[in-house]
Length: 185
Image (cartoon, rainbow, N blue to C red; front, side, top):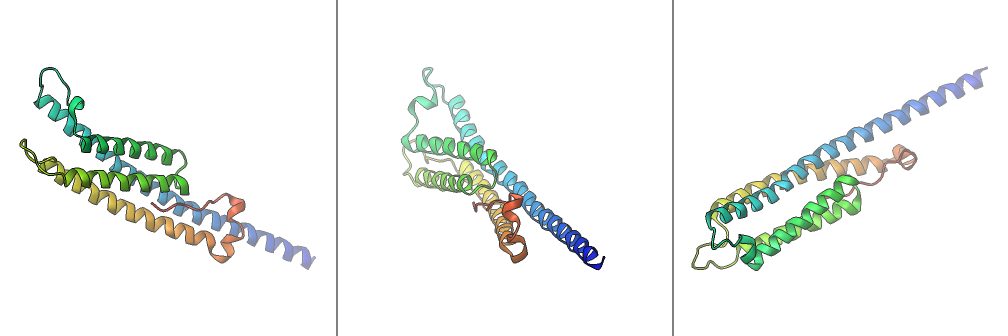
């Protein structure tokens, strides 16, 4: 009788412990997903910013029916291509959120976007003026600050999640529960 009671108590303890581990990891993962949503929202502002600027400059300079896209400098074309790659990486990361490969591609595409921006920003001015208007530069810097802040917060949460996965009692069951390693952005 005492043996079966002890067995039931150990089984109940194991179940409650497993539920506690599951709930803790789900809470941390949910915070990571919320943080990813914030990063995604801020990263999408780059496209709105650049495309809005190009659309405004096209309206301001209707030269013989040509569009601005017909004669964009190479640096602007590179920036638009980097934006397209970033937007595709955001879509891919949304499909499999927090996955290591998806977040790795997103980080790489974000770095390439920043490099394309720096090349455009550092291009010498021509007769028409600076390559990038000062207002656009300040807006870009503001968005970059928000992205970096959100990215840092997300990375802290994901590091905490990955550490919680490998702590001793939890690491015995996390694979069975389906908790995969989260990537770092």
